[in-house]
Length: 214
Ligand SMILES: N[C@@H](CCC(=O)N[C@@H](CS)C(=O)NCC(=O)O)C(=O)O
Image (cartoon, rainbow, N blue to C red; front, side, top):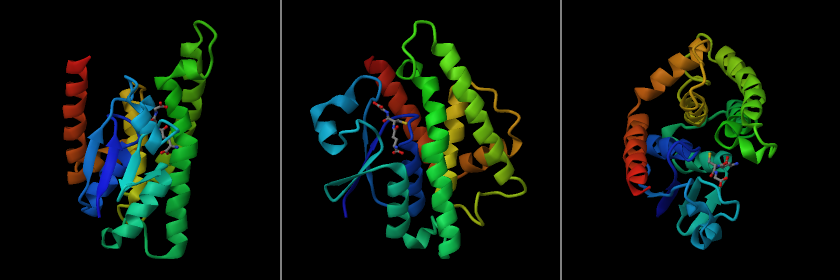
């Protein structure tokens, strides 16, 4: 099977990068620059007319949307136990990933693209401020879910990969997230995993290449 992941640094394409690595999948990475219009090029739009990463191309068929990609990886590589075997916990994992995708992610994006949310001149800081109030509510909930435990469920799952990206992205916006002790402990545990080290090395290399080309 041929797997190609369309990836851009710091974006939510980080999620399947980690999960595919955790699964031991043989995949190639196609680096795209989300800041210079790569996602609006006709060849990319053919794969994903929504002009978004990640796209996982599976034997030539593009699959989009992180939740679906995560479930696909978990089902394809069951030995990696990226979701849990029992149906009740599996649905809990999917619920948590749906929250990352449709709850937390939309509260992160205004930090990167405030003008997509309000076009009044000078409104950027205000847009970020209101989004971050909601983001911090999310992080408080995540912090409570992680209290007294290493992972969101009883072992490392695809949920941990997803939340790792959410919390990393908040940090990348230089938000003071020090109050979320359990989230900080979780990100440290994640940074210790080989999959995350591989991702961080790749991200650093691609960001340097893109900066050089700019
Ligand atoms: N619902 C999608 C969201 C994907 C998404 O928003 N990707 C962002 C990066 S984090 C992107 O590609 N943005 C580029 C753009 O909007 O042009 C998913 O969960 O996969």
